Image 1 (cartoon, rainbow over the protein chains, first blue to last red):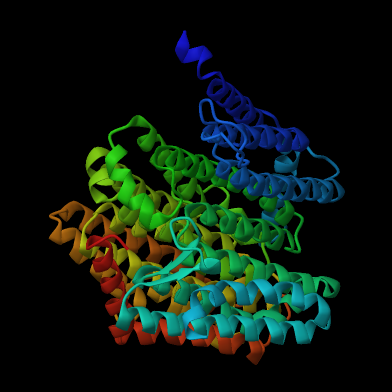
Image 2: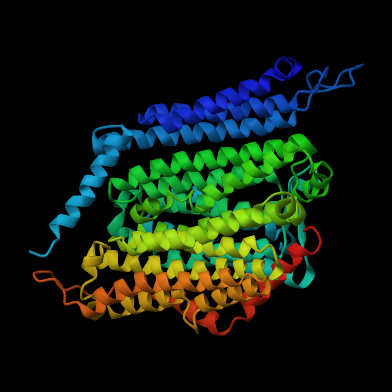
Length: 129
Length: 492
């Protein structure tokens, strides 16, 4: 029981990670893929934040009479990772817009099918007649 | 000034990137980028010299002493890799302006150079830093700019390749982040040297094993180790030629560096190769990579695809060297990292020249090119021979060391398979030679001219390096062996 309740934040991390990962793999919709990627990354943020927690520690601000602090470093690290995550999402969305302009769809299978079609046409075009 | 070289290596291209926006004129930006990259090259030469004579350099960022502050630590291994990256980058940039004229719309030229510099910054950052979290940040700098650079390709398929790479790359980077997080959880430090000291104490725990596995899987995604290579062929085939030449020669090398750094100097050989069955795993994946990717390469019709798959196969050779976990094997791997950068830089740059004149890199468009573009095709042939591993080229040197290392280890079948793998390279290189030299140009097709000098010179510099370092192996072998030695000696 302690394994589940005591470490519940880590369980959330794992569940979120798997949900995100599943969405990335299973969904063909590009926006959904990006959302999945976000959930996947968020789970890692929660993991880092959990690591920083020190049992019984308070916020790391120096005050009279407080000796035990939580570790602020993981939070700082994860701020950087959050920024990176935003940049990735922005780039992913921008690419999705360009893909929509170029292909007229944002479905993975349809884009793939168009690419394959294009390749097949190219081969046919140049067959010696 | 000299004392600050480790940080200048990274800061120079980083600062130069936004400065490009002020210059605006594409020609000017190009010269500026070239200058910056050349400066980075000079810095890396100086660093390598310093390291070879005086040993490891430790640089404290902002004067905060490690392990609290971020430390930049240059030893023989990363000085060597930084030299490869900045060197290839400079030569490739020589050709950049001419090549992108035909491939990228004019208003995007400045942005192209900015992204290029950022990508260079990221790669140089990964190799110079001595801090595990810094690795992640630089990895993302180089990756995000890489996705955008690939998306600049003129075909719409470039967008799709870039998106796929973005998804795969981000998963890889996040895995690396998880790995680093777990390492931090167990040791409370992010400094690499400090990690190396503290990890053995907790090496028996499952968390450390998990950390290592997450990290290595993430790195292997970036390395495009078979079967995690799916993003690579399309990304290389549809990106602008300059970008392909740059990435094929450098980006996988950076991942190879991370693999070596974390396996050998942080987790240690005894953990990675004794506790975990890494030897068998990497050997199997490396050999599979060589054969599957080489075979697929034979059946490709786009020559960029051929060489992209061949890159996956070459990574297989590196990993085979890596899996030997011996001094000789690691030296062979490092040599191949260096030599492969020269080969693939030359090949993809030459393909850029073909694309410049012919407008396509489909195999059938190579018909008759042997006569029409003798210098470009000559470069492809020499670099192709190097890829196969013919004596007097660099390819031979690294294959030789790899085979010797395998025999030293008593792995006779592996040595045989390495040589067999080279035969597959003969097949795909021969297809190009046959089409270019022995088939008449297609009827009704215009004759093309030889590529402009601006493209030929950098191509032949790289081809010349292929031959030069194939004959005079002093520099590459000496540095590679010294780096391998330092990894098997004390912690960096």
